[in-house]
Image: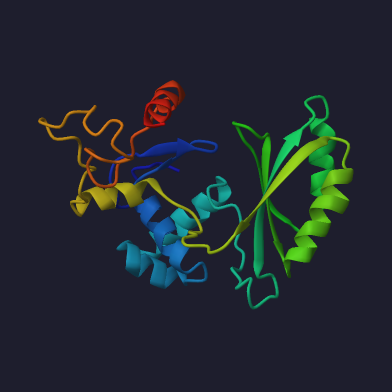
Length: 223
């Protein structure tokens, strides 16, 4: 499908088998994010294109794999899964295939990602209570030979969770004149406040990182 069909701006990305996403495609995805069951007529009206154009573009997004599937979003608390935990896993490096296979057999795992850093993978689970999380970690994960170690973190509050984000979200935010992150003032001294407590001499909302050797020296002088 040509990116020039119908209304829309310039190309913002190329995905799948060759469909080029333009501003109209992104607007369609924005509308579907709010209501995946919207009718084609309502979709066309909200995007500002003809019904035929909306249908053609919608089907192209599905055929190209941009839209993978439609599903329902539930209230996990009301469904009896009020406890959310992140489990960080260290995997024995020669046993990744076994780890993936075993994890696929665990229906309580909502999400898993391979990560950089101290651990190798992050697993998100939803359970009815803390005891279920404990049993899952100690009785199931710990018994997988590929798992070397785990660290569990409980989520206290899910502050923000979007179905998905789009490049147009950031572009629209810039268009509204979103304030840029303030930089240090020309007269500020990056060393000001050193040794006088964390954050002194720095703009509000910024952090100052002190090297280990510097911190030990300051502690030695204070004693």
